[in-house]
Image (cartoon, rainbow, N blue to C red):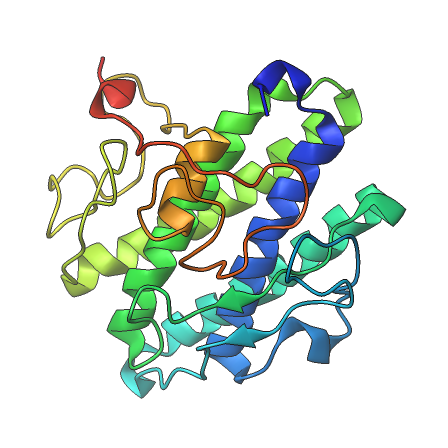
Amino acid sequence: MPENKIEEVDILNFALNLEYLEAEFYTYATTGKSITTFGVGARGGANGDNPANGGTTKGGAKVSFSKEESILHDIAAQIAADERAHVVLLRGALGSSAVAMPNIDLSALGFGFANQSDFLRAARILEDIGVTAYSGAAGMLRTPGIITAAAGLLGAEAEHAAAIRTHIARLKIETTAMDGVDLAPPPSGDARQVLSIKLSDGLIASRTAGEVLYLAFGGKAGAKQGGFFPTGLNGTIVSSTQAAAAEKVAA
């Protein structure tokens, strides 16, 4: 769908798909349960093999956090609550136009729940994708109230990303860059790149919806399903493009 044809409701539903994913990831990691056990709604409009009463999530499990690093559990639990609140917020804003939670595969990365290091590696990927997705969508929003809410969501995701990246750097956990836009934290990336902020201009990077879905679908261009979303997203923004290029973060 051309960007000039995308309506705000489409953008909000795209964000809702991503928030379902993040909320499921953190809620499983901290409780071993789905967001639906906390009374969070999952029904709505659905595409293809995604059920209208809410999809099935597989691959998630409760993480055993180190007792010596109890702050990591506390951070994860707060982020889980935040992400559930984001789902509730977006569903409330969309009303009857809200899409259902799609089928989700939390094992798509091949890691995430075996231990706290795997959890931090996976969380870093999800948070950095989320931050750049909100940044990329900002210019397509027109309604003041929606812009204000989106700014709040972007700020929350940025705090999440900063917390996760800081602990990755502190614990010296190796990570891998996802695409040309990804600014991997140390020890794998530049020692100055603890935060996902471009050193050239002090801003975060942006990804288009298609570039976000390239990552969400497991590095597939021109795809409509795969990776975290085995039967695709719900709504109208559903296709991946190519990976984001490095020149997007250049000075």
